[in-house]
Length: 354
Image (cartoon, rainbow, N blue to C red; front, top):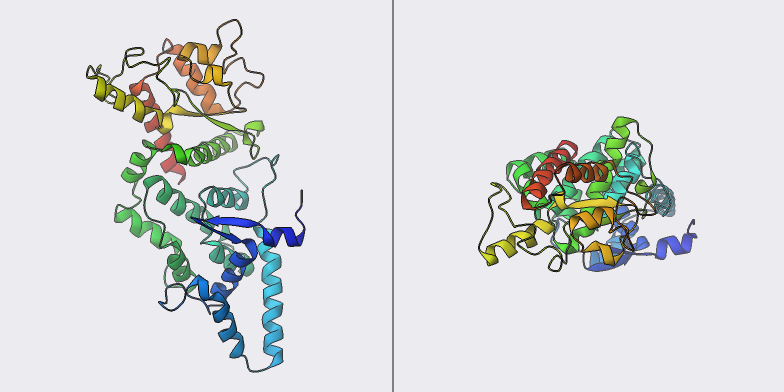
């Protein structure tokens, strides 16, 4: 459904803990692109953006200059709305559509602070827009996964707009400073907290899209916007059917059994939230099978419980199909060590992309 102009501009968007309308975000973009609002300045805050506009317009010498500014704002608004479109629920998400891909990632990460830079590049029709968008998605995702602070994004965006730095340079510096280096990202992918399930889902989604693009595979329903669900193979509520003795908790690196109950419990809790324990499904699992032991969860019980493999919509994700085949080939063993091995493999894929 295409939103009416009023609905589009009045729609609420999250910026961290703050909600702002699309119009408010856009007006900040205009002010930053025109360089009369710079969040790096101590006396410039979003809360006094109206004053910045008034001050800027008051400095104009005549009516023609004001008309020119209004015309620019109108053109900016067209570009903004054409670029920052809402992704339809049934839209297929393809890797080669960098605009949709990067905006989808930024919105999932609740980041709109780089909108002014994206608008500037879109207005200029920069040939390097695709490269810049890829760098931006890498920069943002690495921060979110590594747990690095994002509070300086607004100022960093201004620095790039003013030509003081590039996103590529920021990326290089932050990697060197160990804020978002590869090791920090790997650690982050081993501890994806429950509130970040949407981030894990986003990562797996675009890994899937890239793999399908490279293989020339069909874009299946799993790549529909809102057409997929995140599932934890070892369930988040594991106590009932995954006690620490069955399968026995093991050290994720050595594979040795862990006898101490407290240590075993901690290791199992942590394993649940590793990226290696997560898969994409075409629909959510029935709660009756979600928390069951691995064999029943995958194949059902032959009676009333339907498992992942024989669900009405079996998994189309290539990564999900792979891990199901691996679990079956390994005698339905799924524990801390097998989860860690898959986490490391998926971390390699993440770092090769972002």
